[in-house]
Every structure is written in C-alpha cells, then in structure tokens.
Length: 371
Image (spheres, rainbow, N blue to C red):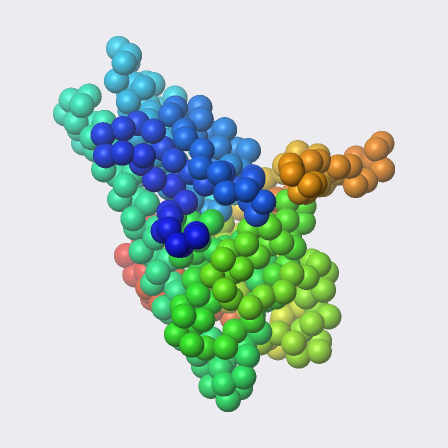
C-alpha cells in the first residue's frame, strides 16, 4: 500500500543482512505514522500481545520473523533446539484466537529442523520468514481479484450505481502484509473503476474500523462513512447495504468463522435482510482440526481497560480518557464466531466456495484426510 506516495508493507526486514524487523506501529494510527524497530523475540511477543501489530495475516508474518530472531538468539547458546522451542511457545501464547500465529511458528519449526548447522538453521529461518510474508501478500492479492468479481456483479445488477459495502473491524492491508482480505476486493473494484462506498463499523472497543479502516480507505481515496457499531442493521433494513464483507482470524473445516466481536450480529442482520455476507481470508487462517467453531475456537478475553477507557487525539498528543463509571467492571471478549449457515461464501486465494465442509474440501482436496 502507498502512504504519501511511498509503498509500504506492514512488516519487513530492515536490511538484507540484519536482525532488525520494522513494523508500522498501529497503536499510533490514524493520528501518527510511526515505524517501530524490533530486535528480539521478546520485542515481537510484546508487539503481537499489545497490538503494535494485529490482524490474522500480519500476526502470522510477525511470528515468522520472530522465529528468525529466535534462531539467532538460540545460536548464542549451547542448547539451540531448547531455546528455539522456548521462544516458539512464547510466540504462540501471545494471542490465542488467530490460528495464523501457531501456523507460522509450526512452519518455522519444521523448516529449521532441516538445517544441519546453526548457521544453516538461521538462514533457513530467515528465508522462511520472508517467504511467509511474501505468500501472505500474494494470497491477499488473489483474494482481491476473486472478491472484486462479486462486487462487479452487484454493480452490473445496479446498472453501474454505487455498490454499498459494510465491513467490520479492519481486514485491510494493515491486518496483513499487503492488500488485505475483506478490503482487497474493495481496492481491486475501486481501482478498476467500479463505484463503491464502504460503511465502516467503528468496531469498539479498540475502534479499528473508525481508526485503521477509515485511515486506509481515506489514504486510497475510497468513498466511505464511519458508523456506530449498532447502525448496521438499521442500514440493512433501509436497503442501504448491498453486501457485507469481513475478514476472519480462524475458520473451521466446516465453515464457521471467528472474527472481531460483533461480526456475528452483522451476519444475523444480513441474513434477516437477505443481504449477502462473505468472509475473506487466506487459507493460512483455516483450522483443519476443528469442526464446531462456536464450541472449539478459543476466544481471547482482553483487558477490561480497553472497554473502560478510550484513546484519542487531543491537540498535539494521544490521550486516554475514562468513559465508564469508575467502579464498574467490564467484560472484553475480542472475537465471536459466525456459524457457517449465515455465511454466503468464503473468499480465499483459490477462489470462492460455499461455507460447508464439502465446498471447502472441494477447493482444498489435499486436506480431506487432515482431520
């Protein structure tokens, strides 16, 4: 994605022969664009846990780079395998819901095991981290092309009038290495000349929609409007929404999808109003070992202060203010699960399929024996 005329990924290696990882610190957006440098496994863990980086694909890429740093750090000890495994467990525990994190760590462990010397293992870890990041960006580009076809069809039905898209949270390029998942089709459609407008849920409590998605679309020039989280159903009833597009942090082999808290309610409203509801994500977000998403997908419970306080730009700095009664506790689940029966289709890098086990396995036949 371009910011002020310069192309950025959300995470990258500072130099070819360096152990410094650069990220866009998303805690500062949309008010400040700050590049943060990370130089250790503990830095990566903190960045994932405290949401300097967030979004399923980007968390996976960060974990891949974290394992590269883990190999470097383990190379200075006499117990390489033990140190790498220790770092792997730290990374996997940083956030529980997005399966991409565990997927990237496991992929790195398998790759590193093929090295015959410490230096070779470090080089393999570096190459694998770079490959994970490149693949994430490429998958999202493919998602954009597949999803844009749906928007193009809606535009045709509306005879070229504006296609109104509702999205929840941030599933744009900031949530991945580039392009995004739910927003990738929007960018592709917009760049091809299709008239689009995006309704952006503010996405409490961290306001990733009002802050991150709005910043992305504004930067790209895509028409959009920020709405409160509870306005979506109202807009759908008044035929002001043509399609709902969201991302996902973990999807079961049967099509249940975990995404930011509040997504399930949008799916219910869309279903009631006969509005198509699509989930876009790279296949690295599949959990092939889970059948029942509501029962088995782990749901992250975050600090209650995210609900009780809100951050905002005050003159020349970001400040935090209390918005609840001081003595009232708050509950802060980070995600919910949308059952497959409410999902019109799944958009992956391979194409669009039904949110059923049969539909998914027809698109990914190599996974038929994975459970």
